[in-house]
Image 1 (cartoon, one colour):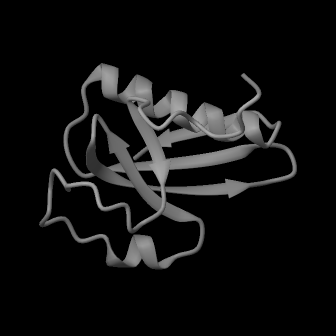
Image 2 (image 1 turned 60 degrees about the vertical axis):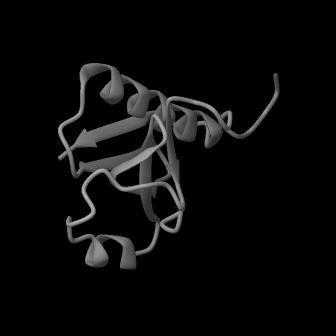
Length: 99
């Protein structure tokens, strides 16, 4: 479609820290992670499930996923798809790390 943004209703999205989506684990401490540059939250099926960091280098895009809840295989696949979209946008290969 030529769009440079993922669809609003995708199963997963990597977005800004202040997303407004409900957190599945409201007690998880994420202040330090989100205070760093190029960080945001992971939205899966309408819920905030963790944080991510990204580094756009000259040869690849590295995305680090820090889930705050257990993720199903489908959720991990959806997150990987969202990360791949980011790498494709920057026309670089993706290095994805679930930590």
